[in-house]
Image (cartoon, rainbow, N blue to C red; front, side, top):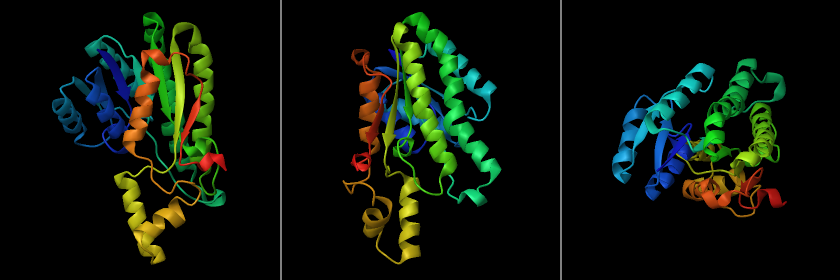
Length: 256
């Protein structure tokens, strides 16, 4: 059995990816999140798919908590083979009104935490001559949009970190790749659709095609299952030559 650590995995994209790995029954899973019932969410996935799990509520803004999470995972399972840096937050505002504290939080959670966690698992991956680090970036890791300065800076940064770790990890069979999704239909996005429909007095389907997915050629949301399947491919032993990439799963957004 291999062991995977997924940050932000008690909801949304992270939980969807965790379930795809659980389905294989080949991974112990370390869950992480700030939900008050996070331990119950992790246990439910473990029970449903018959895999061993661990839960940590480590805060992405606290380096010591992140290191402790890694150490606890290694203590329980022996090693961490795969790290998925998924946790992230967003804030939309013109630059002149962008709150300093929001900038710091977004950079800290979306980018700096990935540095701390990659550093924490690196030694063990080198010793075992196997490691797969997968960063959940965004289409906004490759292109920009207005009013998202911190988010876009963090996601461009995670793509740069991905490339650097890929180069450093190459001699040790440690790969690092970034997945760059467009809009993913999570409960959070579904709420945004409903809010936008009310604000613009249009249907929810029109919000999807004319507002949220306007930059995508394929007017469909990315599924968490698709992201999970891509992560499974990147985590595979046979994927040792796939490294340093930023893979868009964005309905053709970046093709334009």
